[in-house]
Image (tube, rainbow, N blue to C red; front, side):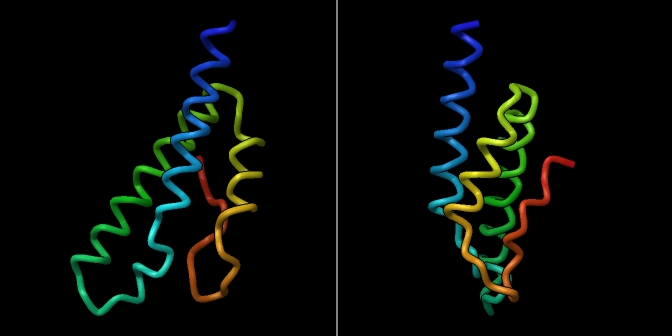
Length: 83
């Protein structure tokens, strides 16, 4: 059980770091390299969220998301995962 909690804490830290460093405006870039990089970041964020869900920590991930993700209609910032 302790290992499970440590793994969840590690994944939540990884998730927080990923969303804090994410380029939230990547879809608006004229440079396809930035759009590709942003999509790759979003793929990693989604993967981590799925791992967190498997560990039972989805509520904590949603709270981090609400705290960190910018609120802007033109950005895709809704918590839409895991699927």
